[in-house]
Every structure is written in structure tokens, then in C-alpha cells.
Amino acid sequence: MAQQQYQSCIDACNACADACDFCAASCLKEQDVKMMARCIAIDMDCAQLCRMAASYMARGSEFSATVCQMCADICDSCADECGKHAMAHCQECAEACRRCAEECRRMAGMGQRGKGAGVGAGAQAH
Image (cartoon, rainbow, N blue to C red; front, side, top):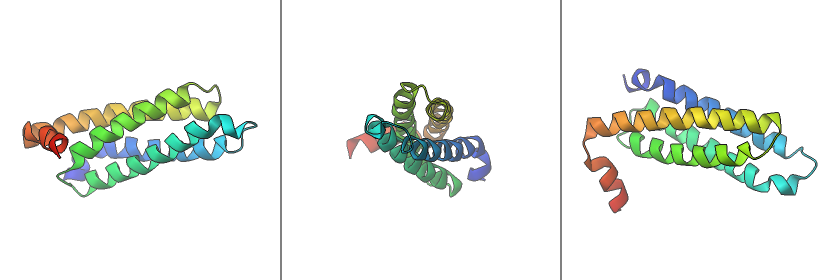
């Protein structure tokens, strides 16, 4: 049931992870790889977190909303970094990250309403 409820977010997370992987691999082939170091690092972080968020949602974890909020924040950072570069792979990655961040924030809001206001507060208190 949880997987169906969050399917659009799961799909956005998986698409973002794929775009980030492709972007990182493509950045490694650029002329000035050193200039792309931050982009590559954030791509790798974002891809890993997107896959983790998708798996939390797929199994209906009680921590899905918390993980998705963190995922949205990382996606925003990745979109900002990739958006600085003119290469098509970076621009496509930035767009996938923006879509994912939007879906994750929507999902996190739904998850927190279902649990009450304590979810966000509890996560921050630890």
C-alpha cells in the first residue's frame, strides 16, 4: 500500500539517482575534471540518498518522511551545483533533482501529517 501511495516520489527518486550517476560518469570524461570535482561528489551523494529514500518508501518505513526531507535538501544542493555547468548532462541532472526535491517535499508533508507534528521535532531533537 505504501509503495502505491508514494509511487510518484519513488519514481522521481530513482530517475534522479540515475541522472546523478550519468552526470557523475559524464563529468569524469570532461576536459577539466578537477573543475567538476564538487559536481561529481554531490552527484554521488544525491544518487545514494535518492535510492535510500526510494527503498524506505517502498517498504513503508516510519522514517520515510524524515529521509525524504533530507533527500529534498541534497537534491536542491545537487541541482544548484549542476545548474552552474552548461553541459547537457549537468542541466538534465539539475532538472531531475528539482523534480525529485519537489516530490520528496510533497511526500514528507504527507508522511508528517499522518504521524503528527512530532516526527520533525523528534528527528531534530536527536
